[in-house]
Image (tube, rainbow over all chains, first blue to last red; front, side, top):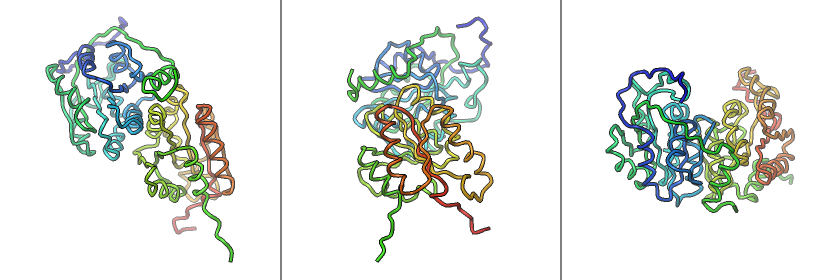
Length: 203
Length: 175
């Protein structure tokens, strides 16, 4: 990380994102993973490069919508959208679209550090009054989970990868200094290998 | 006995079926009503109702990533909501097909529609979307087919802009 990183605003969150995401992904099976741009993309990249990871470098707010499109096109594959609190808030209405379409194969995980981590750790919208699990429930996504301890990773994996969806979870993660783990950024290459991995495009 | 000319929506629907476009993501517009009703009535097709138009860019890109074809249908005001989102299919070289019914263009009653209606084609082309404007109802089917083919065969983003001249201006009962 750069030496100009500003001090963090206080947060009581304990979960360390990198090992937590890596452990969650060990339960992935054949699931396709759609991360939001920025830190969630770095997190899954750090856990080990896979063609089923649709890395994102842009299009903030669209992770859940993109994952929904994939889930509807591939109803026999589990799909996990994994994004940050800022990205989720920007696309919060997409939870209503997910609830309406009700895909059984879609799980949504928000890594919530209550800050805009990529841009200088400015305060986000989820650190004080907003409860995103209740927001999701209000939209009609019945199965939600608030994760505050690393020991909940087993229950989270069950909800994200096994429980009939749509499912939604918020993991309250700490603000941590993590080394960059930048994956490929050529969107056409990311899309190509993703499609090859699920057999809808020739290598 | 004179036969009534069939609505242009039937022409678009025929071209959609011919190209296996099975999903339509939308924020509705009055001019799209007949087409959207046809999609809902067809058991092989799916309507994805959005909360804002840019979600449709994500849904359509996701559909292609998963091996299916989708399109997005919206009013011209919704185009403004989509510009940054279009960076996703454009960067991935994913096909993105958009059907836009224009407002603020031909006899518009509502001044609030005019700025975005004026800018629609310019902003789409500025971000890299091929635009196919169409002024006459009998040309919509073939124009839609041409846009769909370039989108899906060449993996480009393409928008069919149906003129308000075709749709008609809504007057809210006032003059």
